[in-house]
Image (cartoon, rainbow, N blue to C red; front, side):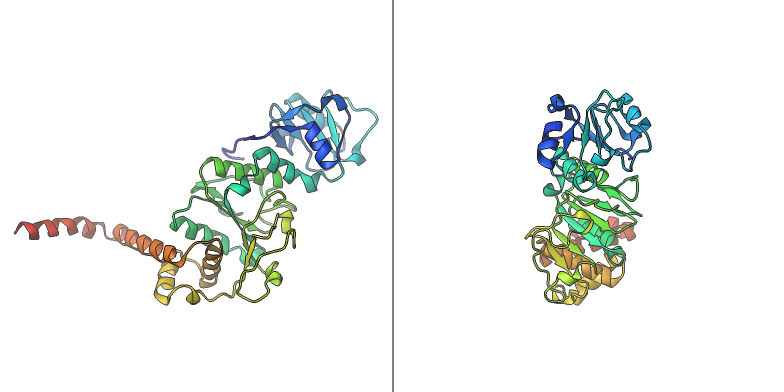
Length: 323
């Protein structure tokens, strides 16, 4: 990944993994071994990594390579357990690595999704909403991280991510976003952007998309989700998670003039803007904030379009007062 660093906040030990997830270590005396990062590919391994191969192994070559590159331990399925392996580092056996890897990475990174407002747009039908929402939040003065197949960025800095992003890589992005001061994160939750279970360990605050609209009790009205209800991509829902329908009329919350101004500031289809507004409102942003942000943004765009007029304005006023 481009300019993404491994940031560890808590001590992730073999003992923690064994006791929390019911794993088995081939070297019980190594329970205090501490990992500083997680890697799913040999080339990602750094000193102190836990290496968990992304796919079943055909041999031990990848494991030996990871060991040589500084891995402190390896995670394998119990079905891959052998009587003997030529490794000096501990091997942790667990059947459901894929289901738990995001939770382990989230623990290692210090639960970064709890430190930002998290928005998820589920399905390809909601894909256009994500960049519009990110633009809207930016206009409202929020440092934003966007994870989208075509346009991932942290505070307008482009990210080069290995799509579809897995749970470990997404947790690293979340941690980096927190480190750089992002207060909100918008995710395009679709197969082009995310791999299966990529949102495991990620807490979602507001979401939208046809795949979750059946959870809405009344069209257009967000409601709280029940714990772990419809866990798409392994995402963590709780009672505070809000779901927003596409059908909400923006003129219910914004007058027509402000909505049309917003269409000019965020140049996307009205359906996308409508859903983005509803998601922002569900997160606690007020209509007054949106009106003020649209007004400021419109004035700024006018000044860029006609800089000479802005430049001459104060001079003319000065001459009149002088006369």
